[in-house]
Amino acid sequence: MRWWDIDPVLVLERELFPEDAWSRGMFWSELAHARGVGSTRRYLVAYGGDRLVGYAGLAAADDLADVQTIAVARDHWGTGLGARLLTELLRQATAFEVAEVLLEVRVDNTRAQKLYERFGFEPIGFRRGYYQPGNVDALVMRLTTDPANDHPANDHPANDHPANDHPANDHPANEAKTEKTRNHG
Image (tube, rainbow, N blue to C red; front, side, top):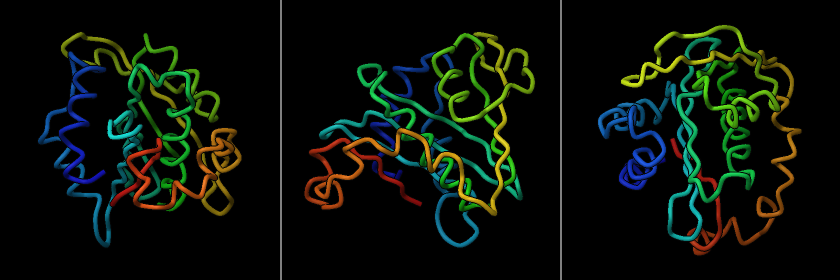
């Protein structure tokens, strides 16, 4: 994700999370920590044609990473895009050499919980009233990693998506024509 992605990210953010959407300043702050030596964040975006259809972010400190956000446009639910975004975040966690990856997910978001469970995340607790202003609880989930070995996400079926192997995806001129996940920072 780069600064020019923030406006389309905000549109999707407000559509998906109207009550607790991140602000422009929050995204700018996250991106400020995603560049250069000692960066602690990784944010990526996915476009379908010229439309942003997903984004995700990860923060890392010491041996712990936290999935900050994953969002997929409703008309792309069930396409595997969420799994591809999560796969890339877990690759980034491996690059940060963390021992654990944590995340919070709304207790009423069973679709996301099932995705995280498929990747090996396990529930470890709750944060009461975490999502405001709706006062919705968060389920805290954890994935224990072994930085010395390949990450289990590398073997996830989302990596076998045919679009990931198409040579046209590597050509900049085709970037806006195919759904592609881009990692910046």
